[in-house]
Length: 423
Length: 182
Image (cartoon, rainbow over all chains, first blue to last red; front, side, top):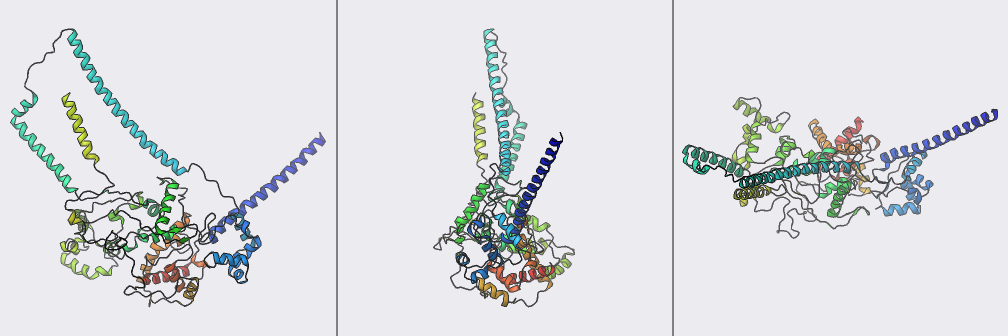
């Protein structure tokens, strides 16, 4: 008994020691990598990625290419190492367009080891079903089920009609068998009775003409109005992701809306300001906006590279450019003058006032009718924001005296004059 | 039976008429020659030029009116020189100018560098861009900032087609103000 008891306590201690050592070692290892990730994201990620070349080379498995000692020296003082004539250092400097890497003397040896530990982590395996796509599938299936319900209803209705026809036929047959004649009193056909009643004829004609005029008017008024026009663009650009989720200001890309008549389709170099770095669509943990698969979006980013002639592997422009033929959505007739900068910079309007909730549009569409009535209505109602706006100070003072009002609308400033927009 | 055919025909015609609405196509116009410009419009295709585009690159070596060519080239040496020697031509930054500079900064810089310049803009928070430093961690001069905004540096792209020269100097002054407040 005693012996056995001793034995268990001994093995228990051994076990405890082992667990202690194990937890301690794994704990410290995990900490290394976590710390390394933090340091990597803060210091290295501006120029380096783990799995792709960026401004500098990709860093996953960098320990297989260089010794720890060399990496320490290089990170702390890269230009010094190059000057000292180290062969590997000079080679890298020349390979990467002779752009020197920032030196990080503030990183301790332990920090650098942590970073190396992070870069030595194996590449995480791609999860097969992304949560986003699963959601998208769910959305699609609900659409399908609606169609199924509708189809079912149509089938049921058709069956009812067929059954009625069949019942009638059966009843007729029964009547025939029993030599029953259905009593059909000869009365005036309904249309003849209708024609005889002059009052009914006149009212129905008037009614018909009124409804006709109503629909004709509606039809005429929509000619040339492209509200809800939603063309397919050569590159699927999602305003929802860029302006909505990422919160990029409209004017970051459409910068000429501030200064020019045209709001400007951003040139591809504006795309490349970010997409030189963002090469694939990753979505985000809280993303509920994914209507398409990640592969789809990544392929769309690739289209930018094809158009602008960017080689992501070599991190260089090839010079082979293919202009993107964007489809223009908002298009005023040739006889109207409209100036973006007047509305954006001077009046200080939000883009959404006319373009609608663009930040929630996966596919861009024309929100407003862009008719003259629509322009005029806004000019009549909008009170000009003159506060801190020197541009309006004098005219506001004079006109508010003339009209005897405190706040002027755009119309009172001359926003209804024909020649302002048509000349 | 005849009336049934008529009903079916009516339904078919009305479906045909309504199904013609296609949101991917623009609506028809009453007088297209009043709507469509005869002259080429912004970004339109045009046979007037060899490459078929209205938007043309200025002739090589041409300088726009009122534009001063950049003094320092887009090279690491140019950046080093600009950091040391390049000075803002703006005489004095009035408070109104700083307001405008703030607006410009919010549009063009804050999305990565953060409203306060701490390197925690929305794109960084969402891990689209990583390693954006806080202005407090970097040695900054207005000439250096101007150079970087003009040509870009590392992962940052050039912003010279979004901001004019004056606007870039205004932003540079605002960045220095942010740095002093960090």
